[in-house]
Length: 141
Image (tube, rainbow, N blue to C red; front, side, top):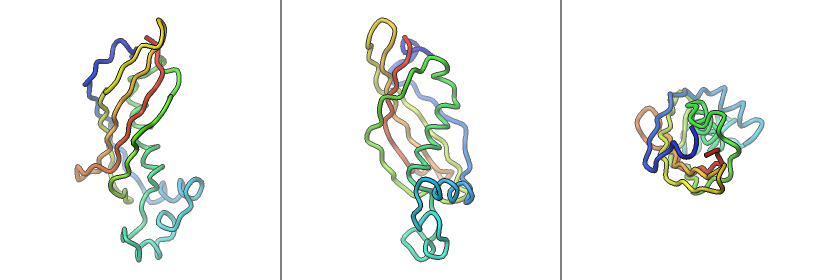
């Protein structure tokens, strides 16, 4: 979709994605090698009572789900920023995540491009919000 096809307030819901322990550990091994993501025994004794996904992993999953919705398609040029990212609740192995996206900003840059800002809220299968943040992208008009 082009910038001019989006309307402030538009809402989109992604398909669900189930997070596995293997996914959590693979991501953490490469990008966030902390004990709460990798060491099951130590994580069991910590405040989360088990392995949890990295917040950055949850963010990456949320973004993947949004991109896979295909709303930007070939009209996206580049991401320009993320703001107010909040890791609200831990994500555990077996959690099924989905993201709800709301268009919160549109700004024309020039006759060919504009900035679209969306608020994304990611929920687990208990309908608990686990992550929230704003994403802006430069897209064709």
